[in-house]
Image 1 (cartoon, rainbow, N blue to C red):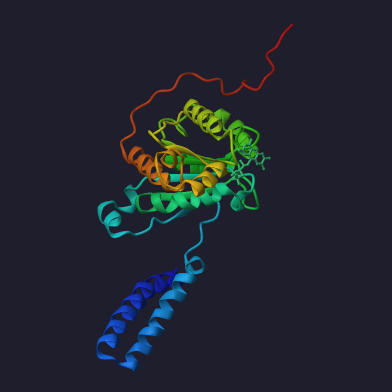
Image 2 (cartoon, helix red, strand yellow; image 1 turned 60 degrees about the horizontal axis):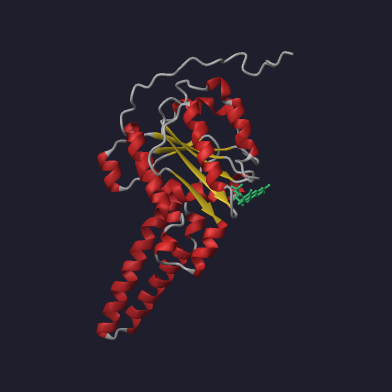
Length: 276
Ligand SMILES: Cc1cc2nc3c(=O)[nH]c(=O)nc-3n(C[C@H](O)[C@H](O)[C@H](O)COP(=O)(O)O)c2cc1C
């Protein structure tokens, strides 16, 4: 963290010094000053190139990430009053998959205004519904991310939802806003999005408007050929995460209405019921 802060400070500073000294050296035709400006320029470029390395990496499963301290956000909203958002990566590939990449794009859009917790359902840091229950209870809102697998969501997510059944319509879910992010190669993702949103609403969650999207490899390739215009505008793109983040935050920051739940069978729902 200290290294990251140092690098964050040095990057704009060396860029500014390089530009200022370079301009002075140009005006005064001072070769020594020009060399110093060149060195600061090199430092800024090196910091920029190694940014991925010194930036703090995503937090492991089930841990809280302190919100980024943008002056406006921290000035207006103290950390304690920010909503806690749980980001659930349901990828078959755990941290290696597209869902992890998508969540990594969404997280910085949420972090200045929320306290984020990350969890993954597959891979070396896989967690379960039971292990996650305290984090789910503590969360004010959720983000679910999954790939499309044979027209459905991932098998770890299916297991998670099955294990979550006894918590259906409880305070763990009731009235909590949820955003859903789906990726696919080419087809089936919209069906996954709509059905998953339906399941989450039945568990008790609420859907903010425009809080679910499908990023498709096919759409990404299409955009390479026609990057601008109304046709391209009609395809979901990573930049649409701005809207997902905004709408999820708007819902999570608002007072939650006092929703009620209907009676649900929590004990015998898995029993065989067929009789001749
Ligand atoms: C077993 C399997 C089945 C898949 N089925 C579909 C499919 O039905 N439709 C589709 O468009 N993409 C399909 N894909 C591609 C994935 O949905 C896509 O690569 C997605 O981004 C994977 O997300 P993840 O890396 O987070 O798991 C499939 C991939 C796998 C491994």
